[in-house]
Structure formats: C-alpha cells, structure tokens
Length: 118
View 1 (cartoon, rainbow, N blue to C red):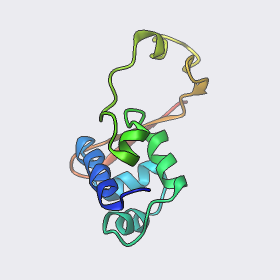
View 2 (view 1 turned 90 degrees about the horizontal axis):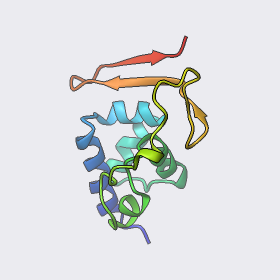
View 3 (view 1 turned 30 degrees about the vertical axis):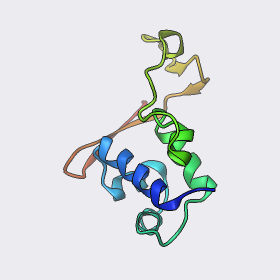
C-alpha cells in the first residue's frame, strides 16, 4: 500500500531537484495546478494516471523509489547504448521510438521557455 506522506515527500524531492514550482510541475506533466496542490497538501491521493505522468515526464525517476522508497533518485546514469543517437536528422530516439516534439526549459523564477520543432 502507498504511504501517502512518504510519497508527498518524494514528490517534493523531485520538485526541489528540478527547481520547479508546483505550478510549473503541473504544467509540465499536464495536470491541473489544483491537483498538485491537493496532493501536496494530503487532501487527495495520487491516481495511477498522475503517477504515470510523473514517470513519463521524469525518466530519472525510478517508479519503485517514487512509490515505495526503494531504489535511488535520480536513477543511475544510463549506458551509452541507451542514450539517443546524437546528430540524428529525424530527431527520433532509437531506444524508445519517439519523435522529439518540444523542449521546455524552466527557470528558477518560475518562468519557462518552450522550443518546438519547425
């Protein structure tokens, strides 16, 4: 069973490590800002969909660590064979078969900049 208090603590660790406000975090994982607030304040428990959005947005998060505090955060570095191929003109990560759509940079003052492929 998920210990919500510990989960909240680990979620805050992710926010701190990535220097994100709760609003920026909500925008990044595409959930309502109020959802983050309710989870961080212990009012609501995280849904499976929420947990999977965190997992998708932050590949350095080990699900076992996030859910049960087993493992490490951030994950140990991936080997060179798991990294995407640099210099690829089609911008497809060969290891997961996904095309790069956009990059979002978050700044410590709460602002962000989005870069999209032309």
